[in-house]
Image (cartoon, rainbow, N blue to C red; front, side, top):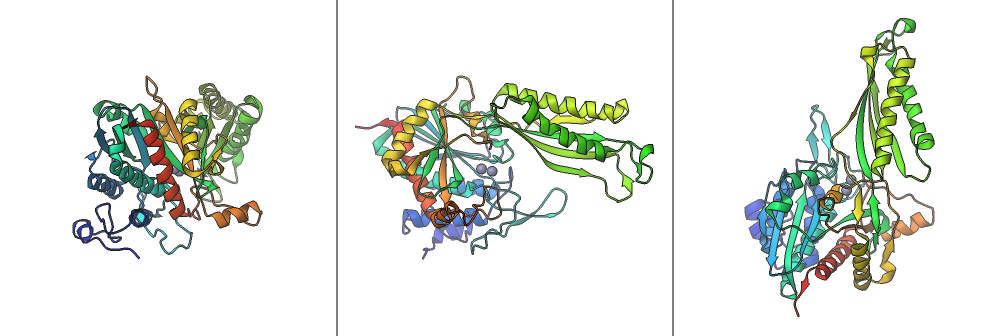
Length: 435
Ligand SMILES: [Zn+2]
Ligand SMILES: [Zn+2]
C-alpha cells in the first residue's frame, strides 16, 4: 500500500503521489511508485519533457545541483563531495512507438499523434523506465552514504537513445567541458534474456556499430499491362534486396560479425500501376570501421549496377543515403570491467554474475568513452526476466519476449533492487574512500 505525499500532489499533481522527499515511505516503495509512474507515462525520443522534469525533481530533492534542457531534454545532476575521482552514471529516458500488449494492470495506455497525423501508442519496451528508477535509487543511496566517499558524482538522464542521437547531443552541448570531466563512465541496460537478480558483463566491444541507410530506387512508372514500356522499380528493388544478402555471406570474412536487414520497403499504391519509385530502410551492424565501410560501399555498388542492368536511365540511378544517426561500438574497458565484475560478485554473489557474449544491438552510451583522451567506460546487463518465465523458457515451453517487444514485462521489483545494489557498489568502488 503506497502512502500519498501531499507535497508532490500539490506541486506536481503526480498520480502516484510519491517522490524522494516523501520520507514516510520506504526506499523500495518510493522506487516502485517511481517505476510505475515512468512506465505509465512514456515519451518518445527528444519529447521526454515530463520524464526529464521528474528526473530533475528527484535529483533536486536529493540535494544534487541540477541543469535541465541540456542537449535537448537532457538532465545533468552534480554532487561535488570533495577531492577524488569523478564518476558519471547515465540513464536513458526515451520510450518506443510500440503498443503495449502485456495485459498488466499498470500497462501504458499513452497514445500520441505522430508527425503524419496518425495515433501512435507509446511504451517503455526497452526498459528505460527501469534504468531511470535504478538511477534515482543509486543517486539516493550515494547521497546518503556521502560521508563514506569523496569525489564528484555526475548523474545524467539522456534523451533519444533509441535514435542514437542523445549522447551526441549532450556531448555537443559541452557535457565534458561545462561539467567536470569523468574519470569513469557507467551505465546499465536491462536484459530480456537474463533472469532478475543477476547481472551480465562483456569485457571489450559489447554492442555494435549501428548505421541506418535509406535507399530510393527510381523507375519510370506506367501501366501494369505494358511492362516493356516502363522501367519497373519494384522488380529492381526486389533484386537489390536479394543481392544485398550476398554482402555478409559472400563479401565479408566469415569471422567478422555483420548484419544487414531491410526493415522497411514501400512502393506503389494500385494493382495495375507500376510506380516510379520504391523506398527502403536498412539497418547495418558491424564491429569494425573496415567492415562498416565495406558494407556501405557494397550497397552502393550493387544498387547502381543492378539499375544499369535493368536499363534505368542515367538520371534514375538509386540513391543510397547513410543517415547521420550513426552509433559507434560500445567498448567496455577490460580492466574496469573485470574490476567491477569482482565488485558485483561480492555484492550479489558469484552465481549471480555472468560473463556474456557481445551482441549486434547498439547503444549510444559508447560515445561517452570514445572522446579524446578516452574515458574508461562500462555498460553492463541487468537481468530483468521473471524468474518463473525464465525457467519455463529453459524448459522449452515458452519463448521470452525480446527488448522492443509489446510483450516485454520486466520483473521490476527484483530488477530494480539488484540494479541499485550493483550500481551503488560500482560507484563506491570507483569514488575515493574516506577512512
Ligand atoms: Zn531500445
Ligand atoms: Zn534501450
